[in-house]
Image (cartoon, rainbow, N blue to C red):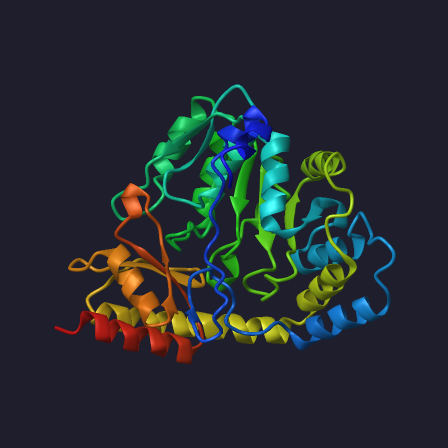
Amino acid sequence: MSASQPSFYSPRLAALEPYVPGEQPRIASLVKLNTNENPYPPSPLAVDAVQRAAAAGLERYPDPESLELREAVARRHGLHADQVFAGNGSDEVLAHAFFAFFRQAEPLLFPDVTYSFYRVYAQRYDIPCELLPVDDGMRIDVDALAARAARGCGGIVLANPNAPTGIGLPLTQIERLLQACPGRVVLVDEAYVDFGGESALPLVARYPNLLVVQTLSKSRALAGLRVGFACGQVHLIEAMTRGKNTFNSYPLGRPALAGAVAALQDETWFDRTCKAVMDTREGLSLQLEDLGFEVLPSQANFVFVRHPQHDAGEMAAALRERAVLVRHFGAPRIAQYLRISIGTRDQCGALINALNGILAP
């Protein structure tokens, strides 16, 4: 970037600190365990639907209401289509929710260790926020969060299971927060819920302040299509749709819509691949513990680990030299942790072999 370019920026843009996504390498031989992608290909039904949608012609706009997709989500979760909002990946869905619900006088609440995009959204939309510390075990302190919410807040955002820790909360804890914050929206980001978490979707009918966000990028292996959705009572979905239609009326293309609907219909593929990821996660956790790592309990498609005798940043660099990518974050509270996505058994085996070489005396 040349020195003159920032002069073209608006002051608002110049003040932003963008989210930094995980590395997407251009070297095919790398074992890629850094961005929580599904290690398995998507449902063959989804691939076929994408191909047929493309062959049918891309010269016309897609359905701006994403009705067929919203109906498919609603059928699967016992909802109505008007209780479902669809967007271009859950990140876009989250952005619409932040804009629609959290620009309040009181601060938005979320944990200090969580998905770092939440801080970016808050900054982008001028949302005051307050970060509540997770405990020494990296667990969300629900008591502290509920007590703070009861004194007044602009809303609550939770990743459940949390990222990057992988630790999940039971529904009883989610209900405590919904009850502590009845006048504001509680957003539960369930990007990883299908790998062992407990979804809050059954609570939608009972709580008018609950918004649940999910993605098809992880458990449905459609990260390349960018499909996410939110579920809540009709008034919340209407608000998000109002915001969407001031930004982009056509967020999802025809192939993405077709692939998403087909993926939601293939329960056999979904059940088999989710089970494979969870089984591999348990085996990898045991192997990492045997190597001396502390492994947080995970209900996601990744594990969050640290080794008491080795610096996490140095270990991530050493793994990359051995063609294995994992994610290292520099934030102070988690600087000694690595987030490791669950790959295939062969990929996890390559990770363990590389770690054996690094940790060998």
